[in-house]
Length: 393
Length: 101
Image 1 (cartoon, rainbow over the protein chains, first blue to last red):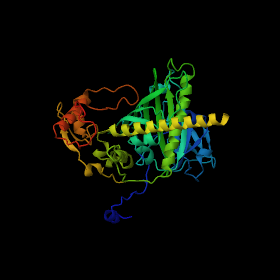
Image 2: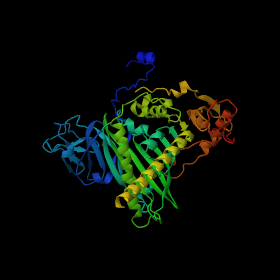
Image 3: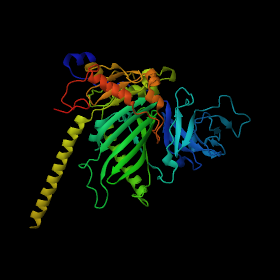
Image 4: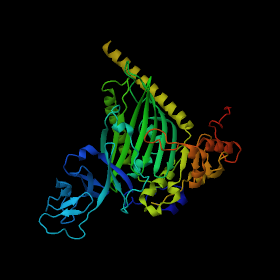
């Protein structure tokens, strides 16, 4: 449908441009770093390329384009030899800086023997790579904040999951501002919702209640869940840290949730979640570990709920919004800074913007819906009881 | 992708200038209701904001995020109460400090 037709018959057309041809500038997490430290090369498909990740003899984690510039061999099927990755095809040796260091059967390494290398960072148990289509190093101040709990004994280890999603990664970003989907897709109940965008950081502050209609009643002797308080921030285009507290009867549980991704290509991305839980007296023993595993599964279920929407939905550049929706356009304006050259980042992409949502009407509507669901559930239970009673009489 | 405008600003009230009554920082603000607030800062407003300059990073990995300026928030509410910043009529809760009919 053309715009002219839209004007004539009043039908709103969905508009969608092509997915971006480049990949975002910024730090991207490739997963827990330990899995790359076994002395073997690993294959990762990211940024539309095949990468090799390997730990060199000096202990550093390196990321290179996997295809050897000699004859195209796959370095990720090669062998780590000292500080270099050796190609399985002709044993050419490549260093973590992307330069060919040695060709065992040649007198000299030829000119231009250099391949793409990504700047890496091993921090708080995660491997990060800096992606920049212009090839510049990360500017000062563009960092991933430290997560104290990740290296402390009074917190659990990471529980980590990854899911390959067949969609452009912009879909996952929209969740930052999408309050209502948390009720309808994830069965949570937001009561407070605010966004702040500034510089390369996009924040979502959310408070929510537990949904009694969406979870089984608390087991005897177990504290019931009341709700949660969450401050979640994307530090750059792909790595979100969620400082998350679950409120239970008589106790709080503090978690840090990571929600991050890297683009595989323009039409798919690897969605990852990581969670650590702080130990406390009430959780006791392995309670925190069990909680981390349970929450990890819960987050994974949340991803599945999102994926079900994404794989069936249309890409839409002109969402039609009501006043109770969040700042989708302003979020996308912020997100655009990662897809243009650094010199083309405009002030409006990075200037501070705040949006506090009015949750009055959503809370009223959702309270009513929850009550109706509970009444329906109670009616179904009592009719099941009646018919069971009838059967045995 | 080109960045599109938020149609809510064209169909309803636009963002309007509001000045902080404490430090004079100038921002663009909008209220879709008494409880909803949008604030577009400029780099200069961020530099001018007294609370912002006095703020110290909080705890935790997101402690660097400055959540809000109380004085600016109060100034925006006051601008709405004074009618300088229009708030659409609706049956929702009224301005802070008033009782619902």
